Image 1 (cartoon, rainbow, N blue to C red):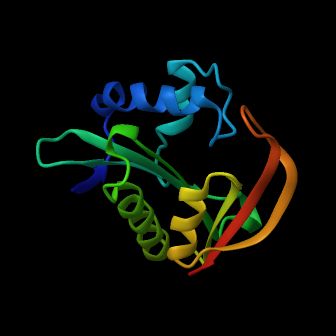
Image 2 (cartoon, rainbow, N blue to C red; image 1 turned 180 degrees about the horizontal axis):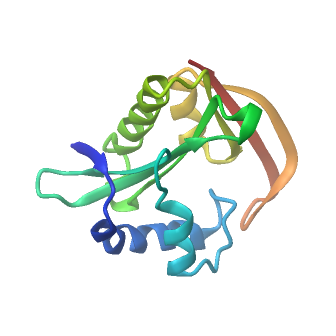
Length: 162
């Protein structure tokens, strides 16, 4: 697997799984009816931020990540990131590789920490992955996420000191 910067030519491969993940409404706080243009504008970041894709040997997009400063101004020393893996590629280590890559990017860029602001507490795969990489739940906002099947559930704030 290769992780590289995203190009505009990657978006048609990202959009189908991006759309399906967002429309499911169970892991991201994005509007479930997000348009393709809105998704592209939200996901494909410009420098100094970064968006990457994980691709296989044939160049097939397996997943994607976006990395950025969590806040502006006096909070810009903490990074954040988001990840989407094609559900057809789930369980193949794509999410872990993207997460590890983003942590290394944040370290190399001089960030002092990495924070995820809204990890749905029922997204057990993501929570387990982040914890395995050293992230800690530093707080949970009760009922802050309206899960389509489980009702109102918490959003974790997770942090890793770099």
